[in-house]
Image 1 (cartoon, rainbow, N blue to C red):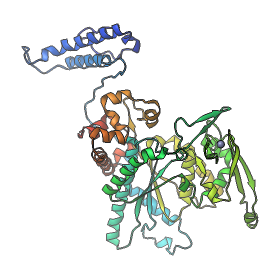
Image 2 (cartoon, helix red, strand yellow):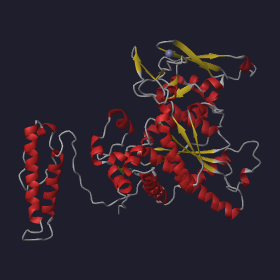
Image 3 (cartoon, helix red, strand yellow):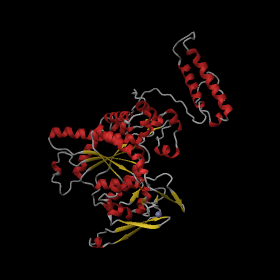
Image 4 (cartoon, helix red, strand yellow):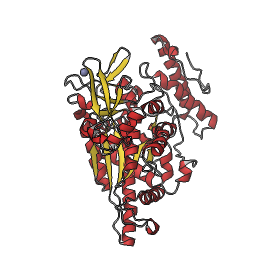
Length: 502
Ligand SMILES: [Zn+2]
């Protein structure tokens, strides 16, 4: 289709078939070029007049550009959008409530946690508690190391180090004023090395199986060095120490036997709560046969059996029963773990909602340390209310003898990076489907991974990551900015072009 010169943009992008076959595509491109050329000609310096353009004329030129842009490539369609470069941070909800301060309310909550969970060994008197936080504060974040860190992951990491630095700064001020030693602050990054490796999944009799990164030779080694490089930079810039951990350490937690017993006992309720799709608790273990290592994805064939051991017979039958969980490999049959053997529990794997719940439970039971978690804003809202808080309340009242209450998890939600339509810039779409072809053309794919960012700048990563770190620390100084999303276009300016938006 051709566009008549001067036709105003009518809000209609050409359909795919309007550019096919080739001949038509060429004619529509020629028409669009002609249209733009006609509109721009009067602006050339050798033309007789030069004047301020009227709004209508500007609109015509902009719409002619929008008509032309999609015709530039048949295979790599792009569209032009325009914006005024004005950055708004409107207030409302979280951004209103935490407009001036995010860390202050968090520290108040940690103080309350400490006083509400004093152990018998703690000599402090709750009535005269002076607000000193003595338990180490750990800021947690996690990642599935299935690609070089994506910009969303980098923002989560920056946020974790930035909030840890801010907490430490506040505590140091108090330390100087009071002369009392305050708690140390650190970051812990947990790698989900049980994430599935692409191409290693299987479906047998309608049941899905997968193989974890930790069970495929060399799979983890591909991208982990990029994660460690990022973490070392951020740790140095924030002057905050970090440690990393993996899933076998997660399942070595001292509370894990008790929590897995609870999962086994409550599996019917929890299954419905944690998996509206399958109604099952997605606890997994890889087949122990070395060359197999398949794990059933949703735990639909798991069998749970209570048993009494000599150890728990002596406990005067106080309701503590151990459990075996039997898993099924489609090639090698059943294999099991027992909750009476903490070492066997390290074979366990869990999907995201089950990990989220187990982690929160063990952290709420921990009376030696404070835990703060940073995670992507796509987990905020209904996800947490449904998959975390609802089962957590059940557990806290039924199973902890009051130990799990009155505390709640401390979770900070990191701003999402969104594409032109407002959808999250997805790591898995990028990894699995070679998505975002247009981002390659525009070179914004440098935001898709740390490796590409380094390639874009031709450096060791400090330039791009340094700009992102500076940006996130500014959000920390102006916390209303932590309660919104940021577009690829915005970050392109900040990180790739090194510009400041208004
Ligand atoms: Zn097997």
